Amino acid sequence: MDFTLDFYLRQTWQDPRLAFGDMYYGYQKGKIESLTVGVDYLEKLWKPDTFFPNEKKSFFHTATTHNSFLRIDPDGTVFTSQRLTVTATCPMKLQLFPMDSQKCRLEIESYGYTTADIALFWGKDRRDQGQVVGFENISLPQFKPVGYRVNVTRATTSSD
Image (cartoon, rainbow, N blue to C red; front, side, top):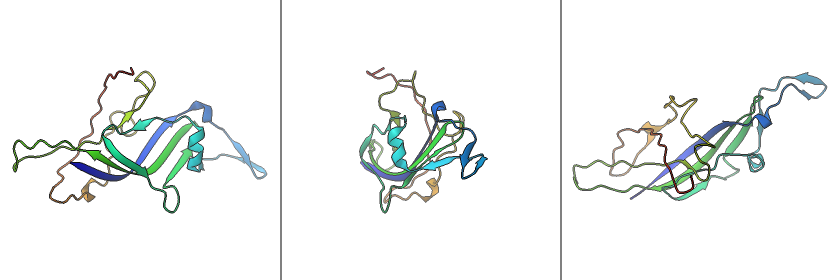
């Protein structure tokens, strides 16, 4: 079975090369809280190579424009938000049918970086698990979602 999610993939990381201080705009020097620029700048910056290994198909939303933005804070913190639809596989275990329950997972990984290069985690820090919002709005025909869980797994692959 497959399932489809429409969500905002929000990622943040720090790149000290992008840090900036007071800047001049017009005739005055002042503090800029952050720079919000078009997502086309993302192609010019380092970014995590996030992907979904159990994805069958996916797409970024572009009607009427890219549903995304890029913000850079003075300390070099980069924040992106992109609307994305992912259809992923959900292997069924039907041994207890019709009294069974199923667990569908959306897996998120780095495609090429190792744990020496990058660490993916939810929220502001590794302990913050409150970043899944809108779960109460999920509806599936013939199924009743009963909850969600965030797991962080460290895996060794052939590219490590």
